[in-house]
Length: 200
Image (cartoon, rainbow, N blue to C red; front, top):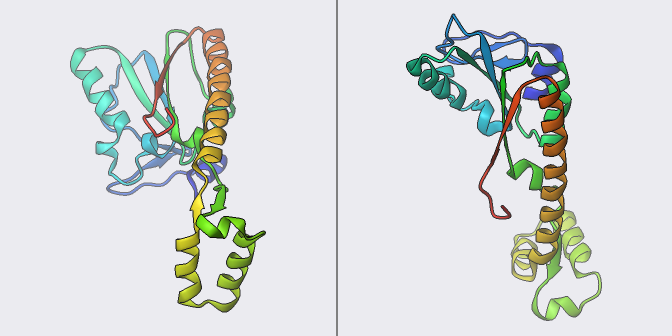
């Protein structure tokens, strides 16, 4: 099931490699004397479901902090596919206190496009409705020649895709401003890290 669902049902799962408590990925090496918290929000890059607990970004940060002697515990709040706007709703339920630090790693999920704009290439651009026609024939007849023809005559409309991704990224920045307001209202600090991607 998805990590969003884990959070909704407050899943607890234990194994040798991956542990989830109350819907959140466990950070290894938590210091027992932490008086403050660092909450790490983001998508799958923060969740790190592909690696064991002791290899997540939050665990590496916890080790670095523990080595310096600072009394902070690092908590993994990663959810696959999460956007800044989605993290805003998670922030409401989390116990963020004065003096805590909230880190938000965002970017690619915020700019993600679910329906890619397509256009016909070359002479096929002059055929009205070429894309729905070839898509329908390809799906109906399931012939390899039609699959090949699709790849030869249909391309991604990069300019439209770029406009959409930039627009979504700007909306994400508005959500970052709202997140900053909510975090600072609790007396905590916000650190925003922009994930490198093609539109950033």
